[in-house]
Image (cartoon, rainbow, N blue to C red; front, side, top):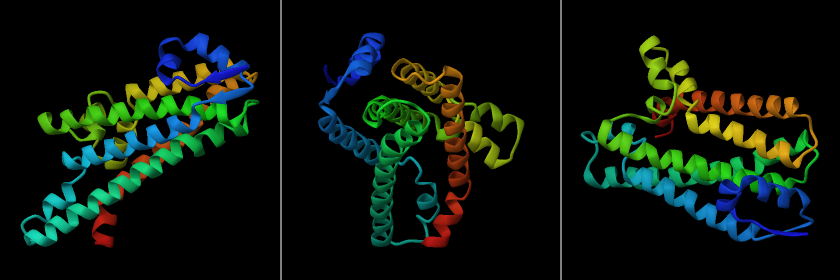
Length: 223
C-alpha cells in the first residue's frame, strides 16, 4: 500500500490517515513536505526577528552603538535566529523521531511524518507570540497560553518561570497528539508511550528553561 502524506488531512481526518500510515509499505511526498516545512520554519523566525521578538539585549545597547554598529548587530541577530530555527527544525523532526523510534516498534519515517505536524503546531504557537509581544508587551514565557504568567505571580525565580512558561496548551496538545498517533501505528503499550513522550518533553522544557535563563549572559559573553 502506498500512502501520500497530507499533513492537513492527518489533522482533520486523523483516524483514517493513521490507518493508512500504519498499513503503508511505501510513503510518498515526504521530501516535498520536508522542504516546505524548512521554508516555513525559516520564514517564521525571520518574521519574529523582524517584529522584534527576543531583541531585548539589542534594545538595551541602542544608545551606546552608532547606526552602522547597531544595524550590523541586528543583521547578526537575524542570522542567529534563522540558524536557531533550522536547529529547531532538525531537532523536532529528526532527533525527536529518533528518540521515539528507540522504544517503539514502528519505522522511523512514519514517526517523522507525525513530527511534521508537531512542528506545524509549534510554528503556529510562535506566530501567535508576535501579537502578544507587539500589542501587549508579553514575552513568550508569560504568554496567556502557558503557565508562565501564573508562575510569575507566585515566584521571582527566573528559571522556574521559564520552565513553566515552556508548558503551554499547545505543548499539552502536542503530547496528546503524539501519544494518540504513535499508539495508533505502534504495538507498544500505551503506558510506555505516555512515559516516553512525557519524559522527552520534560527534557525539552528543562533545556528551554536553561537556555532562556543564560541567554542574556551568553549574549554579553559572546558579543
